[in-house]
Structures are given as structure tokens and as C-alpha cells.
View 1: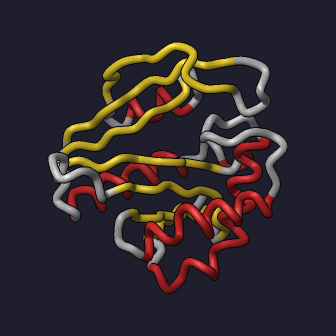
View 2: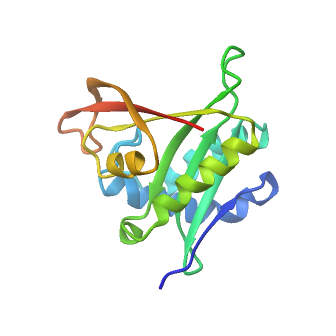
View 3: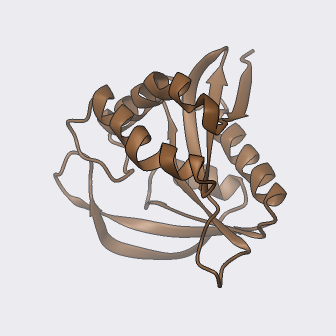
Length: 175
């Protein structure tokens, strides 16, 4: 039996998680994940992403950052963007869901998505959106968590290895 816990990272605690978050991101991108970054991608790149792109948004209150642990070791993360345009106060976006390759298929992704729902509801949101590489292993996970397909855009982005383009599926969930 594995013990999975998901924690909302407070603004004051971000720096203590930086190294592990950078490691999770590096292993995810190196494993081919389609999260907007290209290979080669190392831990310094992951740390820089969190320090420059994510932490300022969390500290400003525009984004939530969740971290998942499996048996006491941080193995996953997801972001919930809560600050959207004024005509979309009811909506939030899931961004950069990552589970370290060795921790996949153990319930970490499900736990992260359940926590996203909890935090979205607490923020008064009634609609969650996301996008994922069409055909990716995460797509059935999102469906199982209640997300529905809104549409597919072909040739949306390069694969992490730069060898080809992939389609992106936009999905949504009503709370």
C-alpha cells in the first residue's frame, strides 16, 4: 500500500520545494511529456522555470501550486491558474500537471486532480479547463476524473524531442 498526500504549497514555503520540483519537471520533460519544453532539459532548467514563471504567480495570488508525495517523497505537481480575465471569474485552468515517470500509475495523478477540484471549489470556481497532448497517457486520466473533450487542434506543438508535431485536446469539467 502506498501513501499519497497532496499539499498546497504556501508562498513562504516555495523555496524549500524548489529542488524537488525542478527534478520532477526535468524527469517529466526528459520522459517526453508535452508541457511546453524541449529536450534536453535538466534540473537547473526546471528550477529556473519554477523560480521565474510559477513562484511569482503563486506569491501574487494568481496561481495555486500543489505538490504530491508518495510514501513521503515528492513525485508530482500541478498548478491551478485562478486569475483569469474579468469576464471569466467562474473559471480556472489546470496547468503543467507532472508526475515523475517512476511514480506513474500509482494514483498520484488522480490525487492531484481531486485536490484541484477541492481548491477550485474553495475559490468559488465552477468550470475547470485544461489542454493535453492528444492521445497522451493523461487523456484517459482526465476523462476518468470527469473532464469532457471540447475540441482538438491538429499540429498544435512540437513533441519534446522536436521530431514531430502533435495535436492538443482541450478539455473542461463543470463543478
